[in-house]
Length: 487
Image (tube, rainbow, N blue to C red; front, top):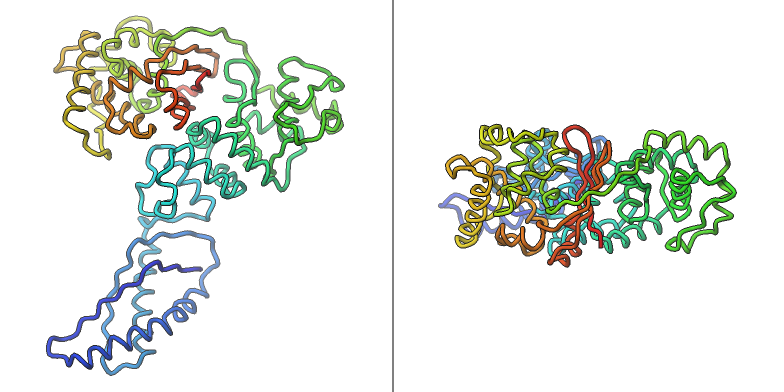
């Protein structure tokens, strides 16, 4: 077991009638004993413990030690060490003490906190304080570039939904840089077509979104790298991705092995198509395609949605009843609330019938969640927010006294989303809606997923910086929603 002490402070109290000279001598002996003997005493006590990789954070370890003015330096150090260890064991056995199995779990927990808008809110996050000034996308990219193997291992510890939630925060540019680092750090690249197929099937909601197989984005490639490591322990390189492209192209068009597609332009560092063809036998290809049978592609026609940004708010409301979610999403639209409330694709996603019976259910919902954990906003902004929500209530025909619950839910969703945007913590709801969330979208609705393609909004530069124009989540019935910006 390894113990790291960032700061050690000692306060020495002596009786009021004590001789100042003797008290000073006692303090000097105490400090001398601590410097000379305490590290070795702690090292000896901890050396017999199991050599685990646990990481435990104890923000403050307070202890009391009563020492005699007649004691020698080694006795003083031994008593202080005994008290330190007694309190240390108590904290280590406390379930409330932050604990991680190893560095991979530690990094994974921070990445997930970052994706969920809770970066730098926990005591142990101070280990990443050097990243505090960066946007969310750059934080994720920097951690991957710093140690790509450790980052992939950390992401592999999480489930698929959590991994995709993290990758959804990344802008296209940051994702490409992160992917370059992952490929450069590859130590045991996978060459087994069947294992690659199993990894593709694991991330199939993203790869096969909208009925057309595609691994042509850096985020999809990173997701594939994580899934492959999670399932096999192998890493990826350019040839691994080319083999994945072979599978996807075959699923789409079914070419014979001798007509395999040539390497994509962005894989110019890898071997040519002849080497790829040599790695793929017809038997292996047939087995891999059988594995991908569970991720069958279904072509779906595109449908137009006048207000596509509400799909970015939907994941913050999924704990509520479908009718309540629909009304709360409509409330975020201000004067355009009625059009959002009648959106057929949203109703399909939430399994709401065409009849207008959702209003009664929504207004009868429990009063939650309370908006907490965010700093107070200026009075003028709060007034504008209330005006925006009351305009929505009027458009929906909801009397103001009955609009409290949907207004609270809409506030919760908008403020959670604003936390993803740099410099938008004090922006009004109307500003968010007009410049970002009211953008149109084209949507492919499949049996198992919705692919939402957003039109770049007036403040698209904010989405490019923050990656907040993307989302990836599951609906309560298991269908997948993937939101991207179509530039």
